[in-house]
Amino acid sequence: MRCEKCGSAATVEIVFATSGGLVAVPKVQRKKLIPKYSYMTGQACTDCGAVFNIRLNEPEKFKPFVDYAAQVRGGGN
Image (cartoon, rainbow, N blue to C red):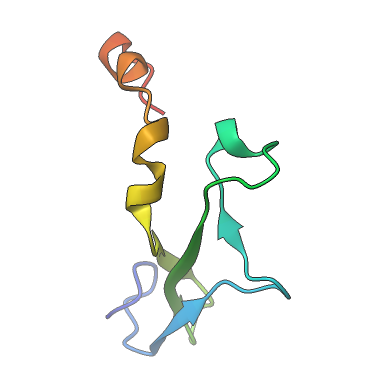
């Protein structure tokens, strides 16, 4: 995969990690004792340092939290 910023082919797959693993949590779940979460992966360029193509490993876990009504009203995100 080529870098989205500089076009270099010198990219590596990365995992976002802390001691317990960096996770994404839906904003509405952030204060729950045991929130839904997903680990994340992405790509990094070894030439310019750009981080891109960030993805949730388990996006289906977030489907119950999609606010479809906001999208219809034009709220989107």
